[in-house]
Image 1 (cartoon, rainbow, N blue to C red):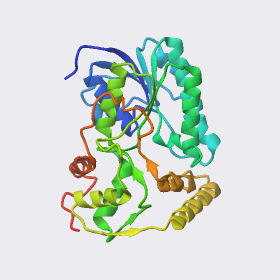
Image 2: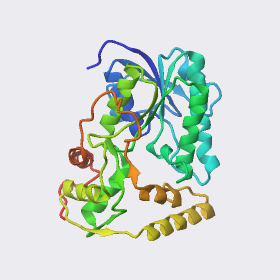
Image 3: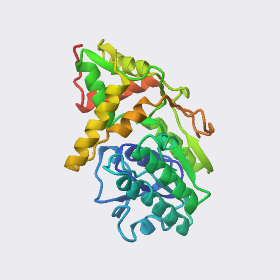
Amino acid sequence: MATDARGVIAVTGATGFLGRHLVRALAQDGWRPRVLVRRDPVHAFWRDTEVEVVTGDLGTPGALDRLATGADVFIHVAGLIKATTLEGFNRVNQDGARAAAEAARAAGARFILVSSLAAREPSLSNYAASKRAGEDAVRAADPSALIVRPPAIYGPGDTETLGLFQLAARSPVLPVLSQASRVAMIHVEDAAAKLVAFCRTPVLGLVELSDVRRDGYTWMEIMRGAAHVVGAKPRLIRLPDPGILAAGALVDAWSSLTNTPQVFGLGKAKELLHTDWTPSSAPMAEGVPSKFGLIDGFTHTVDWYRAAGWLPKNIVA
């Protein structure tokens, strides 16, 4: 049930995975969400949510100004996760973030940028470099902005993580990456709740998020957890780093040849092999504590997939 109205909050990226959960959580907290979308959104997550719509995208003349005018807070979630060049990433992740921050500042709205933990290592990939460039652009446009770096996000409605559970359920083997790596994770409802808290109570600077395990998980724990919650017992096979890098390079070559950007490539392979994706280097001002750890978060997600028909209800390992 919504609390007393808190005011208008402008949201970009509202129809994406995190954005859908965030808009619902904001409305439940008493905010009046105003979203920037290309077309009037109809989604099950917003069945009981009143949403004001500004039609357009980050490049539509005047759209960001219309979105920001009269808003108390502006939270920029929109971002690009695949492109064939750094310039392609920067058009959205840098230039779009700058334009959003400038519109928010002109309207007197407090600005929050949802970045990525990848921004901490900009040399690894074009995506990571563009997310860091976006952070730098926002700091220049509005030094009072809050920058939030979430780690890998999963949960109900996520099409990206679905593949992990499908593979865990059907394959006799599961790949395991570097045993030295530690990877922070967060359930989407926890990520949304923390962002809502930041909207409610001003925080400045940089915050890196995680679930209840701030020291992250090993790839072995992640793969075993995925297998456990779908009731399967595949063998875990360690993939050699050179093979992962070679696969990424091949995907990049194909993407360049066909001009079809892919999420996975050499840059993403380098990200996956990076040893430390934990938030230990940033303050712990996370607003509200996380509810989910890996196993209960994965279980909640798989239950949703099965209820939605995305995974079979009875899986035979």
